[in-house]
Image 1 (cartoon, rainbow, N blue to C red):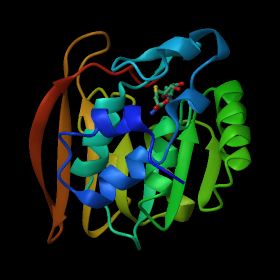
Image 2 (cartoon, rainbow, N blue to C red):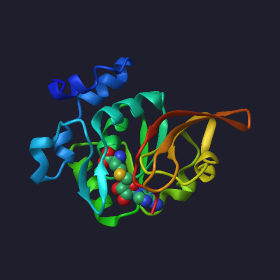
Image 3 (cartoon, rainbow, N blue to C red):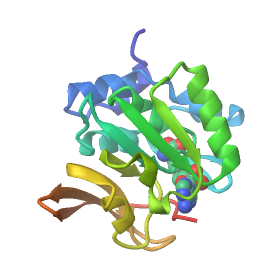
Amino acid sequence: MAPYPEAVKLARGIRDPRVREAFCRVDRSRFVPATLQSAAWEDHPLPIGDNATISQPSLVAEMSAWLSTTPSARVLEIGTGSGYQTAILAGLCAEIYTMELNPDLARTARARLEALGFQNIHYKAGDGAKGWPEAAPFDRIIATVAFPGKPQALLDQLEDSGIALVPVGPDGGTQSLMRYRQVQQSYRSEAIIPVRFLSLR
Ligand code: SAH
């Protein structure tokens, strides 16, 4: 299957060839509502219902790179939304565990990802603020919904040397995309860029 030309343009800034490849093989139009098809590849977020948005595609590509994935990684994702970020991660990693609070969004995303043939995704409709303890530990954790402060419950579910990428900050304000790395029982954290995500509900 050829890469999507619109995606190739959006992924220009991505240096990691694995991430570029995974990003360019997912058709964003499959994750965008029927009424917004003409805008499917525009580089901004689009509404998907219940105040949620499908993230800006260039940011999805960058976040996929900042997560430093490996092919054997087990990944926890909080905020399935449309399932677009989930699909890209599923092409990069071994197993994805994705959580979505809104049952309608969770159901739609699952049906869509199953129709696209993904078989390495585990779905849970529920509050992702406390993570998915039964499936922990994870090599990587990514949230596409903002946490009000340090996401300790998620960090507790990281494998040794694991990495978590989580937007942290106030509802409706500017948040920092934080990258946490587990190093010998403690966490190194760095703020990568300012972002604006929907906050945890
Ligand atoms: N990555 C998604 C966008 C996610 S938007 C995409 O590319 O489409 C953020 C999502 O987080 C929304 O779907 C929202 O319903 C969900 N969410 C909000 N609070 C949550 C919570 N407590 N637990 C899990 N998901 C939550």
